[in-house]
Image 1: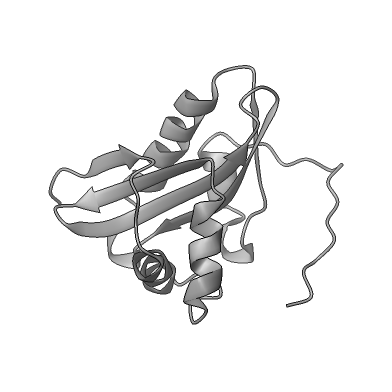
Image 2 (image 1 turned 135 degrees about the horizontal axis):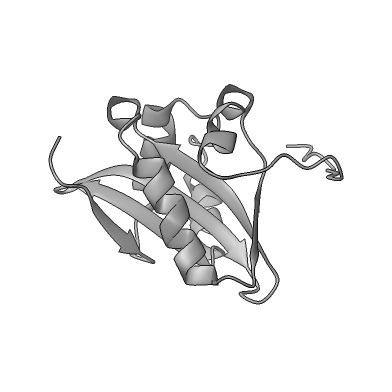
Length: 133
């Protein structure tokens, strides 16, 4: 595998964003590019991973940079998984938010075993109100 390059807050298109979720096998509203563009527009931190000109990973987060940060998306192209790309994007996100900010996320069911291996701790005190669309 070539050297993967990481970029912080590099602008990407909604179609690039949608495509990485499709190649990662993650469910997102990838057929709604307006919604995907809005998701990008309101992100505070966007870490991307590149193999040359090809986007192979993305981590999108929302943060106040003082207390909490929610990592809403972590996606790596299936052909590039198991090479530390997700772990590196998590580290770069942590570098951006600093040590005083808690990093939170909701895991896809298929990733429940992944997150403890990269430093996350399960919490029993979380709650959610699910989206209706």
